[in-house]
Amino acid sequence: MGENPIIFTRDVLARYQISEKTLWKWRDPKKMPKGFKLHFPAPTIPGVPNRWRLSDVLAWEEASSQK
Image 1 (spheres, rainbow, N blue to C red):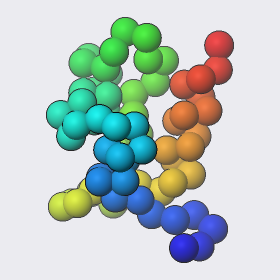
Image 2: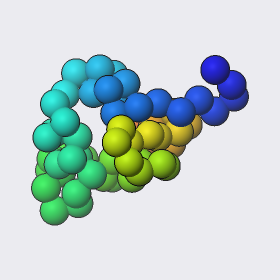
Image 3: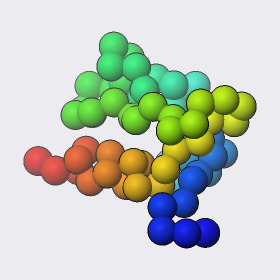
């Protein structure tokens, strides 16, 4: 894939075992779960399907897991 692969909506859903509706809630600061420190990053390339840089998703995971 390359140094910074692009992942699709389906990859994000599979990674976290969530529905598309849940993903959009995670992206909205007003609707994200109370335990979340940061909302999920916006897609790097919006469209159908949306696409994210894997590094952005991993950075969100890292930042979200820090206490």
